[in-house]
Length: 306
Image (cartoon, rainbow, N blue to C red; front, side):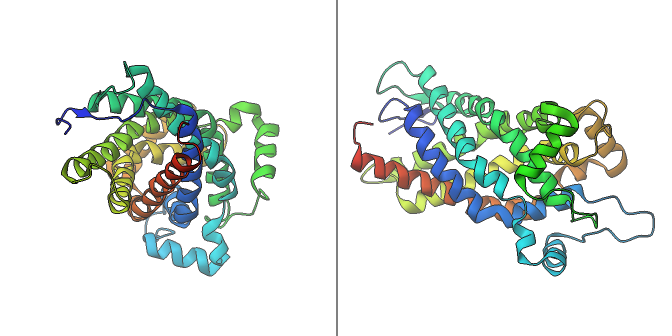
C-alpha cells in the first residue's frame, strides 16, 4: 500500500507506449467534448455589449440555442477538424512527455514517485504538447468564432485557415498564443495527472486485488479533467481572446489581454465560459482515460513486453 506521499509504479514508464495510447485517448476526448468546447470559446470571445444592450449570449444554453438556430447542429462542431487532426499527436506528445518526465525521475524498474514528482512530470508534458497544440488551438478558435459574432465567413476549413494565417503573418501568426498555451498547460497538466494518479492510487489501496477498474478510471479521468480546467481556465480565457483578436490588438501579447480584461470586465471574466467547459470536462476526460486504459489492455495482450 502506498503512503500518502508515494505512487507505486509496476513498471518503468514507457514513453513510446504512452505516445500510442495517448493518441487514442485524445481522439476519444475530442469526439465526446467538442460541441461544449465551441460554446466555451464563443462565450469567452463574444464582444462587449454597449451600455444598455443585451450581451450576444446570456449563457451556455442561450449560446447553444443560437448557434443551432443560426448555423444548425453542425455549428457546434465547427473547428473540430483542427483538434481531431492534431489531437492524436497532441495527446500522444502529452502522454509521452508525462512518461518521459516520470522516467527521468525513476531510479529503477520498481521505483516509486512522490506526488510532487508526478506533478513535475505532468508539467513537463505541457512543454511537449504546446508545440502542436498552440497552432491547432489558434486555428480552432478562429473557425469557432468567425460566424459566432455575426461576421462573414473568412476561412473555409482548417487548411484554408492555416494557409491564410501563414500568408498574413508567417509562422508567428500560426503560433500566436503559444506562451498563453504554455501558461495554461504547465501547471494544469501537472494537476491533471496528479489528480488521476492519486484517485487511482486510493482505489488500488482499497481494492482486494490491488487493481484499478473501469468505474475508477472513468471517475479519476473525469475528476482530473475538472481539476485541469479549474486551474487552467484563466489562462485559457486569455489565450482565446489573444488568438481570436485581429493583429495588433494586443501589442504585448497575453500581458495586454490580461490588463484589458481585468480593467474592463473584472476578475470574474477570467472564468467566462466555465459552465460549458466544466460540463464537458468530466465526460470528455473520462472518455480519454478510458480509451487509454483500453489501449493499454490491448498492448498488454498483443505485445506484453512492450
